[in-house]
Amino acid sequence: MRYQAVIFDLFGTLVDLLSEEEYKAGHAQWTAVLNAPFDDFRKVWSSTIVERDTGRFGSLKGDMLNALQVLGLQATDDQIRDAMNTRFDLFRRNLAPRKGAIETLTALRARGLKTALISVCGWEIPPIWAETAFPPLMDCTVFSCVAGLMKPDPQIYLLASEGLGVQPEDCLYVGDGGYYELAGAEKVGMRSVLIKVPDDPYPFTTRQEALEWQGPTVTSLPELLNLLED
Picture 1: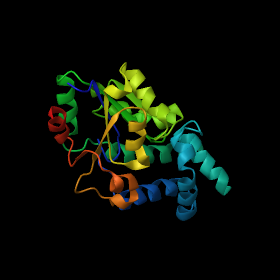
Picture 2: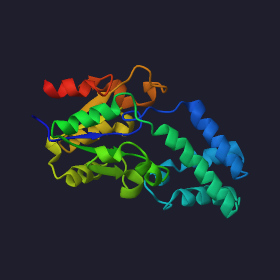
Picture 3: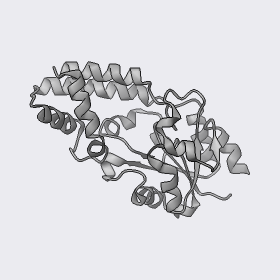
Picture 4: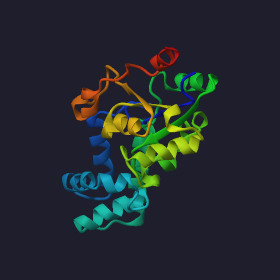
């Protein structure tokens, strides 16, 4: 077999993306808990995505406190706790495995391949990750907020291959093309596959790499199993 490991992206790959309406409704709910103006808070929140996804503020509470400080607002500990719980609940729904995800991961491991995750995410994900179906099916997990790195930084891919105990060239990387993640994986020696599902709620015009990609592409996770047999 050509590969020893398969490394996956999370959002848009192992789990479906929530619609813009779902994200907006969740944001409205927890900004209301903080008694913060929706548009102003969302603008500040969006402007700090890189800092949040690289863990700069140390926790979800830290992310919220920073946004409140920028806006000159304050919130009680109870408000912050309730807002955090609302945010966690949104991502609990978001982390439901995509159709075929668990079956594909199980089949890969049955074939003797190692599996890993590299996700660009904020502090919403690590505290609830153990509640999902994925941890028993992963040999290594790399969250950008914990690592302090984002795709396509070469080091984030190397953290995963080192955690797996394999060489980058022995890894297949699967993602939806966000952050030019596919090219980033190939720069360290991995082989990349684009997943482009037909019912994705976000237009792929938001993922320029997916529009430019000339390499192997699958439209569902189980298709990977056939690709590995080629």
